Length: 205
Ligand code: TMP
Image (cartoon, rainbow, N blue to C red):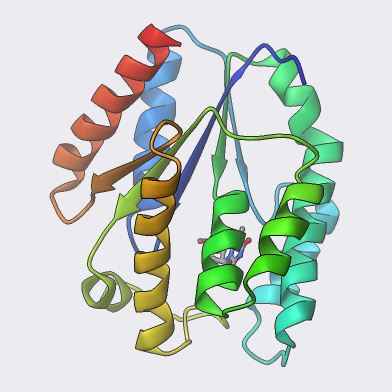
């Protein structure tokens, strides 16, 4: 798909500080005169937000395959309803999580394997981030930062360790697109590193 915008996604384990970094990145890019929009996955559409509420509600008992399908459904809705258009109308489109989360959480975390790769491929409709920043942080410390835990955050420590390992594997598998940044530092230090990575990317690309 031909597009005008650069598509940037942010990933990481729970409590890795994604939201704070994304908001700093947005301000920085806007100050540079760029037209920026931010989405979150799952979410950012009326139906996507409803699916998100189902997925995160700890009262719900959801089978692994249903969970996979719901994440794919929310993303399909986001792509068709918002993302495709945004990629042609903005300079920068930022997404707080995207298909790498499915590869890691449902693929590595739940161990659903190949079907995850195949279905992610099909239901991303050819849309691939230009750059993906993974905020790599200590699982135990990050989980301790959370106040109230949702259905996914409540999973075992083992599950969360698999996520960090999964993200590191992705960074190795896609070294050009995926950048791993040490997030066990102060917010300013992490932001500085993210900023440098994005500056290099925006200059070269
Ligand atoms: P967050 O956007 O606040 O981080 O919450 C989304 C939660 O959903 C988080 O626990 C990660 C999880 N998730 C998946 O398990 N698979 C996915 O494909 C996506 C996008 C998120």
